[in-house]
Length: 181
Ligand code: 5GP
Ligand code: MG
Image 1 (cartoon, rainbow, N blue to C red):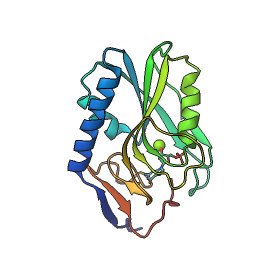
Image 2: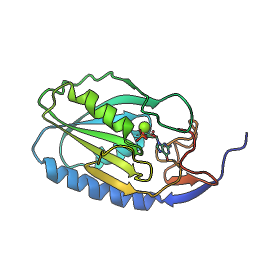
Image 3: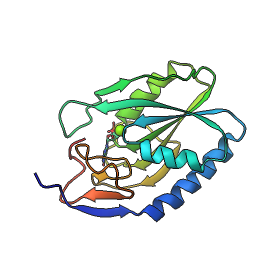
């Protein structure tokens, strides 16, 4: 099966500049407060790596894995979480780093799940905010980019496990955001 064509959405330079600005803001907001940054695998791995390297405050790092399952074209709220957190989150400030906020169901499940560890605070940082299909009231605390629509790949984001390695962000051509997740 041939791979779909891609059209550029965000360049490496645009991403780099915006990630640096966001990292400055996060560093200023937490300052001397100890922070645990939790990346959501797999999609957030590239964004997370760039973001934490631009922070000017010390942080601890952990990961959680979330995968949607079921039919291909909706996120359906059925999110499988594999929690292998090794960090004690009790009374710590937590920043969840997610690739895309779309309907909002994944991140709602994730924050509820993290809240059970009784952290001091939970905030959410997303690389891409897509408001078009939002089904919840969820708002991220830190947003790198807002994108209207389209199915995005690259910079950690996949389409059927392809394209995660691309250094910039592209949209699948001839596709709506209803494409496989
Ligand atoms: P939500 O539960 O907010 O609808 O789903 C969010 C998840 O769906 C994201 O973490 C991401 O894994 C996936 N997703 C949503 N939109 C896109 C997209 O445009 N491209 C890719 N690769 N994944 C997406
Ligand atoms: Mg995801």
